[in-house]
Each structure stands twice: as structure tokens, then as C-alpha cells.
Figure (cartoon, rainbow, N blue to C red):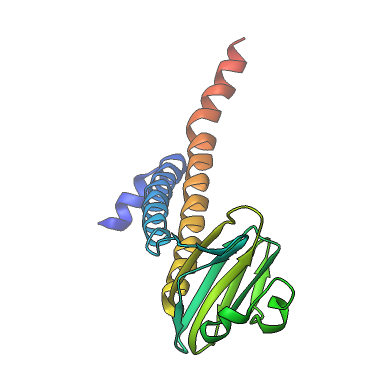
Length: 178
């Protein structure tokens, strides 16, 4: 029965159905991916300690937690909470934990244990946005990004197929009449 249905469809109708399926599934994937991307809230909680010195809330690391810090300060670092009172602009690089990765003001810290604070020295209040969550939650967000991108690709492909099999033939026929 199903085989007869597909045999009776013309190639153009077959591709139109595929295009619509791609668009619908793509929109669902984008929506699902976007929802996943918004699950870990970005927080901002710097406190001015002294003039030009700002400190975050403390982060209680265990082996399965990760910190993503976004800052616009040039002199900063994640340090053990017990050492925070001894940190100055001159020695912060000596005591600061090196991030696992850093790119364009976004710093990633993981595989740490204990209490840490992020300290930044700046003449103005610096940007200190962060996400602190379990590593598995960050992975879920990463996969949600992939899902949203794949959904956008599906939607775009469906739109192109619809254009090729619906709009383009009409434009081609209109040009013949002129």
C-alpha cells in the first residue's frame, strides 16, 4: 500500500514532502537546542573589596564542576579563597590558577577542588559574568548548540528544496512567456 503511494507521487511532489519534513524537523531541533542553551543561567556577582579590586562570590569546586568566567579586565585570576587577602595587582599572576582554556576574555577552569574566588583589578567595575555548574551540564549545553545548528541546517535545506521545486519552475515558466 505504502509502496503504491510513493510510486504514484511525482518526483517533484516527493521532494516537496521531503522539504516540508526538513523544515518542520529543523524548526523543532532549533527550538529544542535553544531551550537547552538557556538552561544554565549566567550570573554576575562581583564585590568591590578595595579601590580597583573586585572579587566574585566563592566557588566550591569538586572534581566534577567547571567554571566559565567572562571578564574584560586585564589583571585577574582565580585564586584559593584562603589566599585572597594576600593578593595584589603585582602578585596575582603568581597565585592565580591557570585556566584550562582561554579565548577572547572567556576562561574555563575545571579539575579543581576546594574554595576559590575570582579577583580582578581594574580602575572601573569590570565585567565578571560566570557560569558555574557540573561538567555534564556544560556538555548538555554544548550538545544543545550542535542540535540548534543542525536544525538550522535542516530548515535551510528544506527552504532551498522548496524554492527549487516550487518557486524556481514558476519563475522559469514566466520567463518563457515573455
